[in-house]
Amino acid sequence: MGMLWFNGTIYTMQGENDTVEAVYTNNGKIIAAGKEEDVKARCSAADQRVDLQGAVVFPGFTDSHLHMMGLGEAMLQLDLSSCKSAEELKEALKEKACHIKDGQWLIGEGWNENNFPDQRIIHKEELDEIAPYNPVLLTRVCRHAALANSVALERAGITEHTPDPSGGIIVKDEHGMPTGYLLDQAADLVKAVQPPVSDEELKTALHTAVGHMVKQGLTGGHTEDLNYYGGFKRTFQAFQEVINETNWRFRANLLVHHEVVDDVFEEGYEYGAVSDYLSFGAMKIFADGALGGRTAFLRESYQDDPASSGVRIHTPQQLSKLVQKARKKNMPVAIHTIGDKALEYAVKALEEYPVPAGKRDRIIHAQITPPDLIERLKRLNVVLDLQPGFVLSDFPWVEERLGARRLSYSFAWKTLLSQGVMCAGSSDAPIEPVDPLIGIQAAVIRKPPHETHNGYLPEQKLTPFEAVSLYTTGSAKAVGKETELGKVAPGYAADFTILDQDILTMPAEQIHQTKVLATVVGECFQYNRLTSGDY
Image 1: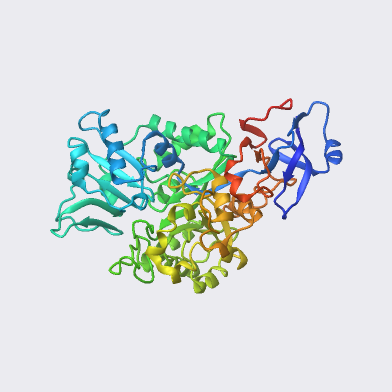
Image 2: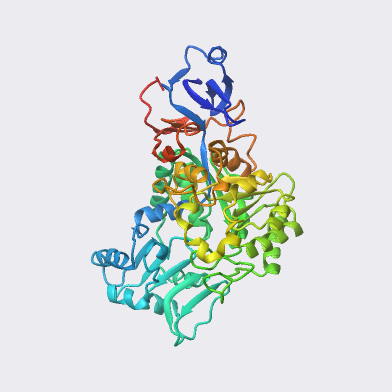
């Protein structure tokens, strides 16, 4: 039994302003799309009819890079992202500390000193005063830095004699004592001594994330979680139980961290589909950190810290060997690169070891893209996973880090698209809100909606169609599914994001106010606020 979708504005995303009057679906696929009279001719009396009552339909939005397990965790743990000062953060910790037992970990997520008037990094001694008998670990919004108190450092064996781990920095004071501020791989030393989460906690976090994402209009997500929760088998089992063995329909593409790629193959899996809604994606590699903590790896020093040019996670030789390993397993790679030097390393490795035929590499973030590297990117079969929401959280302080010259070729989405570089849209949640409408609006106006200027680097603004394309056709290209996902056309999946307003024609400053009326995956409603029809 099929379904007829009609009486709305249905964008196909096959071209700007390309719409159809009706769509007929069956068995999770689009069978016909076009004039209502023609499409109705395909229907039988037994088919269901969905009267859209003027709603606006797009191909299902997909977030091309996030951390779904981390999103669920952040929703269940202490959220520090709204703290506007160090004192406000400390008050939130004091409140939480009152409700936990001695010895229990106090975990917080999302603090950002760039939101503080003095941009002050809290010292471990301040955390010791709040929780003297509890290990404390507070992950920065970028997830490339963390704060730990003395109890947590002691459990991790971090002292004044502990050397910096490869790809990380243990920040120390003028006397050589750890301050509690840990950058990139250094934070992993503390995470390694945390008690493991239970299987039920993993499933609860993932279930929470998926439930939230479908309410935001997302029909899928490309997520990187498999190396952080007690190993591949436990984490993948949670995905199987939540995605495959419940009533959820949600298209989860799982990036495979290079440290667990052997585990995937030893368990009998390989790159590609596991089921209709679960698949293994590219091998994930970190090349550097983030701009907020000055761990993004730059060609030149930071303008506001001339002694530092960031942190490289791997040498060029190590990065190339990891890409070579992926090729031996017939896999594409997804390389986290924020700084331009990290991007240079990544491009060189992809040139040295081209992606296997029929597959496509990914570069995640690509925030600083000098012209010479764009020219080299154009010759590669690669998609850049962009995060439009970063312009809301990184400006204006990012100019202090980079200076005007480097900023001119950073966050350069219009340039990348105009040069023919394939791009996809994402949130990097829980670092930024997972709501794709926030990302779409950010790509179009490049500023928070309440600010009155013309946007940060306004020459890089996207059109609404280009912005929506990032989350539809762009995300489909990122996983090589552009003939199956991201468009409303015969043969494509019946995945729809249904909105109450037309975000391609409404005032751009109001896009974030649009309401999601329904999220449809494989012809089935996963979230539904429509009030009509016999579905």
